[in-house]
Length: 141
Length: 112
Image (cartoon, rainbow over all chains, first blue to last red; front, side):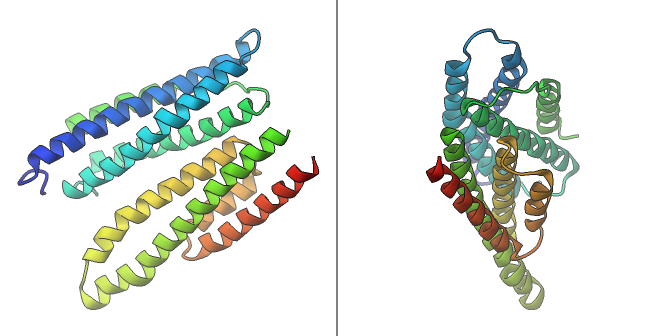
């Protein structure tokens, strides 16, 4: 509603920040998926790499998720989009990606603490979800 | 081992905070905002509290899955803790349950 009227300029910046945060979020989930998929095959000591990934997750991906959810909710409320099919489908994918990130983040912490890494095959889903979210957000079918 | 216990305690502390926030926002939504909408025809409370509780619910689910990924809970614990998010005030019981787990891990940590 007010996105289309008085606060159009403000909403563009909100959207820009939301999209930037979404890019960082998906990038972080892709990186963690790749890390978890390849860790069992890595020769030598992978502890410094896992620590680096954990730090990136903590300081970049987690804040990006927070911004995605806060600004996304703000945009959906201001645009009165809740209840529309495209947003419900997009929300479903974002909830699944956020949940996957939660599991991955917990696994990374566990591996950093010394547990042995288990094989993870989440990357195809992450890539499919990222494409679906982009299509749903832009085309609003 | 001690490092893993410390990480688990920090993850559980975050989950406890999330469960309290989730329970509080659900209680406000169900006990205050919804009656105000239906009995006094004042929908602004639901319009404001709905998204706030939605965000709190997502935070709780994310924190729960993080502890699941860290291997802290068995599956039936995860199912119970997830179910508590749907019942008003059950989140408070969940936070007590999580606190007890934190205390058990603290004892284990100081014993090692």
